[in-house]
Amino acid sequence: MPFIDCHCHIDSPAFDVDRAQVLKNAKALGVEQMMIPGLHLSQFSELLSLKNDYSGTAYPRLDIAFGLHPYFLSENNIAGNIEHLLSKFCKYCTQYESSIVAIGEAGLDAKTPIDMQDQIAILVAQIDVAKVLGKPIVLHHRQSHNELIRVLKQKKFTGGGLIHAFSGSFEIAKTYVDMGFVLGIGGTITYDRSQKTRKTLRRVYEELGDEHLVLETDSPDMPLFGFQGQRNSPERIPLVAKALSRVLAVDIEHIALSTSKNYSRVFSSPTS
Ligand SMILES: [Zn+2]
Image 1 (cartoon, rainbow, N blue to C red):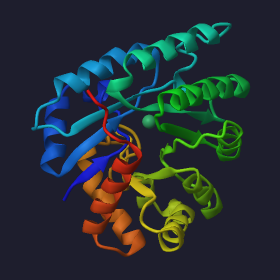
Image 2: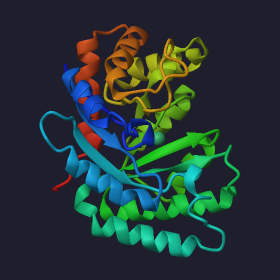
Image 3: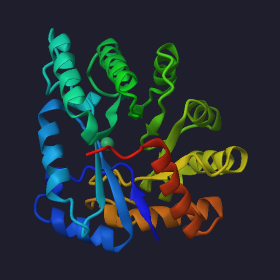
Image 4: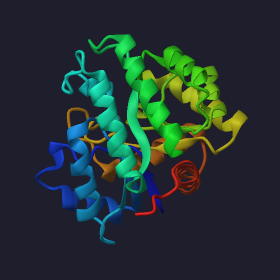
């Protein structure tokens, strides 16, 4: 069964000891492709070499994206320096346009100490780059759906992309779907506390069809229920698919096929 892990930080130091093996195992389990999102400028060259180093058929196909994640903004030393950061970001994205499938992981996080207006300025700049390059965008949210939707609408962004680790109401899901986004479904649906999101997903599936969900692990984060405290891995994608198949009461084969198709529709492969 072909699976795609649409959000996996396989470049994380958590995989330094056994990255090649994890990728091989994932491929053997059917994970044909995965996307590694960008987090901060100094990581981008690493992503390019990773894509290159693991390009053999023993590994899943690695898609990469360049983005500025709100968690890493302090690291980028944004104080009085946003313009410089953004111009460097633009340059990188333009230079490697053909190697990236998307812009992101961008977004808004109400829980980080970074000023929300600064976060919005940096998000808006990334939306502009996505528009200019004709790329979709990968979005992180944390208690920020309303603000995120407001910014996307204000920018009239129609390029679509991924709402990473979706959780929320049917109305919010539908708003994103109407804007061309797919919703990333990961290990959180295996927990009891995710009842509201599971209900939303059932409604999305029944009322909007099977074209809006994709699978993700967010490895090494977001462990599935039963694996708390352990490193998450793209090897667990079949378990996420199984959990989603239970939530929606459809075959796992259908989940594998439809989520892979949905990913490919939104993120067309780069030319190099
Ligand atoms: Zn992430």
